[in-house]
Length: 135
Image (tube, rainbow, N blue to C red; front, side):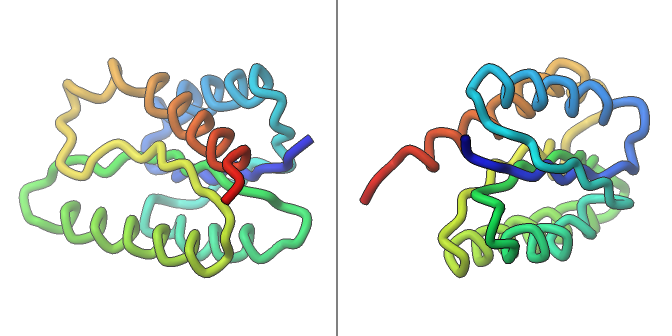
């Protein structure tokens, strides 16, 4: 059984339990073993936790959960691009898949509830698919 780690930003305290529950259920359905759930303050802290996770020899992949809302400035957009670039770089460097279930950047509060479960489940499904692809 493949082992994954779920890393979640906890800034959005009301929404994250919904995402986590959906991700855990999908991992169970796909027979992925969730070795650990790591909680970090927000999406900006996800890359460091991801770096630590992907460098563990016993971990096959990771799922990231978080929300980057639209703000009054472009801070969220910049942060979103930076986080995703780091994730891509780390996947390539470690040859381990990462499923991104981070809503946004620029998501509006009214758009969040309808996307929580779907994004979390899709992130787990993406890791599962990538773990099965042989090249």
